[in-house]
Amino acid sequence: MAAHFGRLRKGATTTAVAAVAVAALSASQAPGVTTDDLGRQAAGAAQPSGDANTGGEGGGATGDSPYYTDLPPLKSPNPSPSASPTTGTTVSVGEAEAGIPATVLDAYKKAEAELRASKPGCNLPWQLLAAIGKVESGQARGGRVDASGTTYSPILGPKLDGNGFALIADTDNGAYDGDPAYDRAVGPMQFIPSTWEWAGRDGNGDGKKDPNNVYDAALAAGHYLCRFDRDLSVQSQMNAAILNYNNSTEYLNTVLSWLEYYRKGTYEVPDGTGTLPSHSSNSDPGASPSPSTPATPSTPSTPSTPSTPSTPKPGSGGSTSPTPKPPAPSSPAPSPTPPTPTQTVDHLEDADTGKLTATAGSAFGAKVAVRAESKASKGVAKVRVRFTIIGDTDATFTGGESVATVVTGSAGTATAPALVAGEKAGDFTVRATVVGRVLGGLDYTATVTPRQADTLTRTGDTALTCVPGGEFADQVELKATYKGAVAGKVAATATLIKSADDPTENDKGPYFKDADGKTIRTLTDLTTDADGVLKLPKLYADDATGTFLLRVNTTGGAVLTVELKVAAAAS
Image 1 (tube, one colour):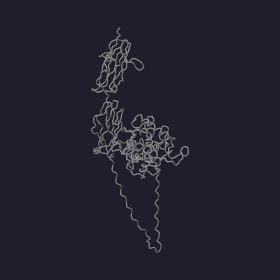
Image 2 (cartoon, rainbow, N blue to C red):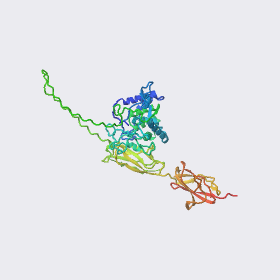
Image 3 (cartoon, rainbow, N blue to C red):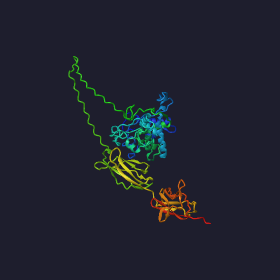
Image 4 (cartoon, one colour):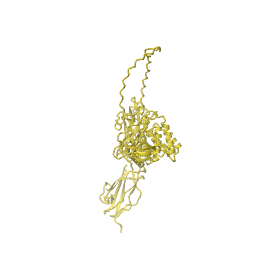
């Protein structure tokens, strides 16, 4: 749950305490990290720029919802004792805070392992997920999850109705947060619905993407932090990732303090027995960031009858009539809050987007561009537009992401990052929508054409000969080019044909063998390597003699026919 950036919270010492805690942790718990280094990195971290690709209307994955501000205990020679929630035995506060519920801890570690495989350059530590999970939901409310990792009851942030928080009108019709009017942060990692819609992952392999499941939420958070080819082993990039999750320096300091604490050692505790935070960024100490059930309003008390003025004592000279009180000045009516730029958007218009076509593996020459306009068809600046790649494709935006959020400029125009085609050929859709508004979006069709070659040549000139019933000594090796350049990863087909005029498959003469050793005379699903080279499997001969033809075709129209001769050995 993220704090609203720029909002004055109760507890004016939050930032100072967080900064001091980070410095103290580095001094007392972090050998090799100086107080000055860590403190300066945390306090001086740059905020994301206004056009940063962020998830929510106010920036970040959580939509600037509140979060827990509790800081980890500092190690000391004599930590104060507390009772263990499971055994009743005495453990130190530090030990209790280091305990992470078993299922929640497993989810963090599995997410780290998946990111290590899919995005090894990110260097995501699971302790960062644990730090964010602690700050966002107290490790799923102390690990109150079932065996599959789903919370027993939804963890919801307050309505993001602009009253002390960001204003984010409903984007999911209440599907995730149960609120059809405004969005709320959802689940152990507190994603707002509009962010979860594209960032959600299936972390436990059940075929669903559930923000209330700690495996799904942890994996989604890991991918969110690893966006834009970040390397989280670099402190400045880690800071940027955390600030992108929630644009608040106080939040950054708090997460970093827990990260350093967890790096010094943690242990597993049973689900449901984790320690719960008690301080929120938007409430008095002891209040939970998650909204509590509203209390039943008390019945207004009946106004008491005004007491009769007492008669003044003789000789006092006082009057028997009460002194009239001047009427209380009426408070001026509050001025209406001006609409945000996002609220003034009526529709999106195309902004001269070019033709979206590219060959597999190359960048698209055109970019998707849209213009946010008011009812009067005037461009609206400072509006977040989300571009999402939809369909069965491996195409991405520059940086490897399938979603990008861009802020409109002074003319109201937002241009998506460049598209990069993957290896899958065919059409897909790029959809542009306004973040924080339920408006019709704009869909653009993009087309990826297969890699192609226009020329095939043999890499050698040795004659290909064989005796009946034998095998050819040399394998056929070809090289593909397109407009003179190497044509790598181009699809090809090889067929032993009947004649130059009859390209149907021959039923005699040379042949290939399949995996089971059976005779085949057509090879499909062939692909040239990165250097455009295609080396065919070994060829064998049956008892037929004569000159036979092998024809190879590629995507793009390249054709080459190779002669194969089968003759008895000379005596």
